[in-house]
Length: 160
Picture 1 (cartoon, one colour):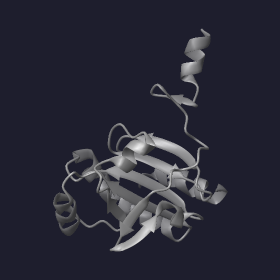
Picture 2 (tube, helix red, strand yellow):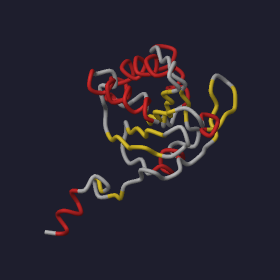
Picture 3 (cartoon, helix red, strand yellow):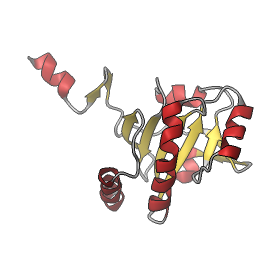
Picture 4 (cartoon, helix red, strand yellow):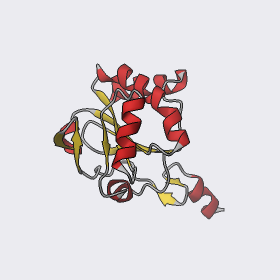
């Protein structure tokens, strides 16, 4: 019975211990042609989304991520996308054909950053608090602008 209780705790999900509260690993990225780091976003609530242009569910959630980004930007939040596309040309073609309003970056080492976070499937999203700690990990596609999700982000941004 104790084992069942342990696996049912919120701190244990999908066979892995919770990463909530751990410092988000910093990494270098380029946004709009300018070098940056995740740590440059310290002080902001970051929605770090790993995606790829060939991932159908990733593509489906981009419009709702755009709307989430617009909603949280004025309150110190930012959606940051990291594409794990193996072909940078496919990534750039995707961006040319689809509006993405949030900053996004293509990992040139083909998943190095995603793997360092423990990402095993995409889309996968990490919520990072203003102090640079992982607040929550969300596996799978979401409707980021649903009423429930927007209420969650409103409450989270107000308290963090």
